Length: 556
Image (cartoon, rainbow, N blue to C red; front, top):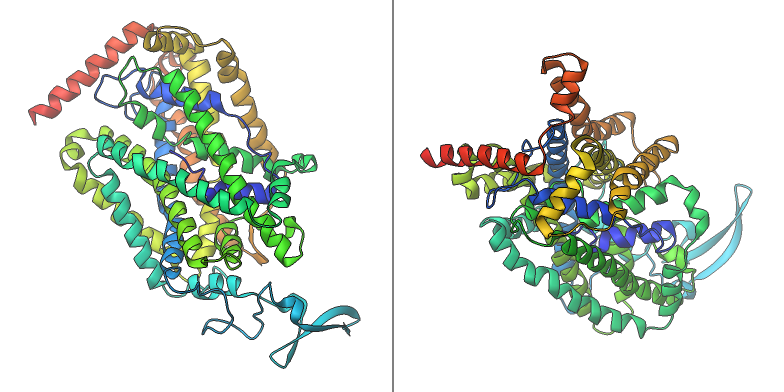
């Protein structure tokens, strides 16, 4: 699964000023994949409460809540991509000119501004550049372009702030519904059916990426964009936002912390070489991210060349990189509609992988939590989850929906929430369950011990990085903004509510478990944190419990 998708990867690179934010978290993905089937009795996947030590249950619930927010928020990007895909299926892309009903008098294409008649003029004691546009004199800072106006005034029809939610964008409601229908039919038959779908949705984007790369590097200025992409700007390392962006990219790209790898890995055979799989997934995923970066920044270099501007000014961060920069670039390519359709179709396929894998992890956890109620009604349950998620997601495609989208992006599914989640996951396995016991479990599965380096990573490196970056971000915390718009206090309060709705599950469940467990301090620690069974006895115990539940389920 991957949220690597062009959108996240590109926006982070552009925001950080280079491609050097791609850190390494291979140790975490290996732990997640091994967790998925170490204690399981096949073919029954583990649920959130099937934890070797009881405090992990809170982590499972926290991951499920965060997956809910992820399912609602992330698919909105795909709805935008589908909208752009359909709008590109015409003789020419509609964001080329300023002659449309949604354009303003300030609209002038970036590629035509050198033809404007402009002069310097003193306004309020400040020298400003003034240009004549349609017999109206306006300052250069007030100029807009057709690509930006199509995005803001046609696609989003964005309001002035979160206080003005406005009407639902019914075109986007239709594309959002279409994507949810696609997602439903990708997962409704379970993992075996999802695995068949992935052969197309995961592999075909490589064909499209290759086509786009070949076209990109043949454009003038492409290598300036690639140079900007691969040469790191070390001065950015003092900015906590860069570290959070790097963590967000890696954790979401590998699908860590949300239970996706645990759920999908649980369907493997017990003797499957999960160590090799983890290394392959890490290598392919990071390589794909880097490869996709070359595709985009070659086009950004071309745009900078055509507009006679520095690459850093052209490379916008956030959703704008996919929905502003690339649409602007295709204007200069022969057959613009074809290249636009290819790009947004690729974005849709990559995003669908991430969406239905996250959905699969969430659905698996919930169904295995209440198998008697839900397992025989799985298809109906999935349909209900998709319908409810769609209804909640409609808030993100209103005229003020972009402001809600940014709140969810910066709080509910942010990097610091994942840091919190994965820190406790590493600590609970490495220090509470016991890294040696976990290591023995790996040997039982694959037949040999992996290099001892992973022990150090699980016990020290990963928890330290998670905790360090988490507090670094808290110390340098600044309220989020959307462009120049400052959110009101209640919007930030809502954002913190969405973030804490998952984060607080862990300490609250720990406190509840501690209060209800009988005994003195040492007895509580032994019952909750440490367990006496070795791996074989623990596995036998969990298998007996799973078998008893399966018999009870089949007797209904």
